[in-house]
Length: 78
Ligand SMILES: [Zn+2]
Image (cartoon, rainbow, N blue to C red; front, side, top):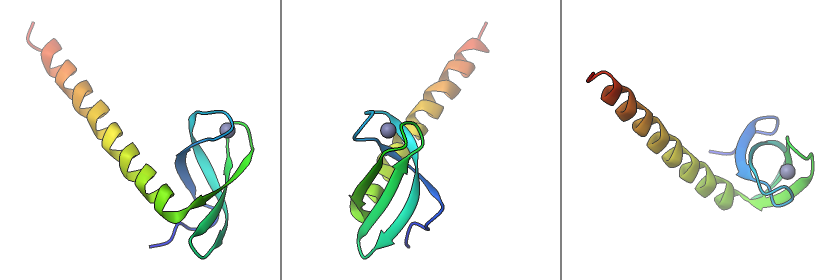
């Protein structure tokens, strides 16, 4: 499955060092041209890197959600 041009992917921006959505601008073979929505700088990344980052991000997001659920369950114990 390719990342579509025009879609947005979370990636760690090499310029501003923030995890931000990046617009997928171009796609050639395994290389993607992406643009940071925060500082607007462009970067070239391998498809594999994007994919790994996406998985890592989803994993972290799940952990954050899990801890939020645990916290809200804890609050209900009053
Ligand atoms: Zn940036």
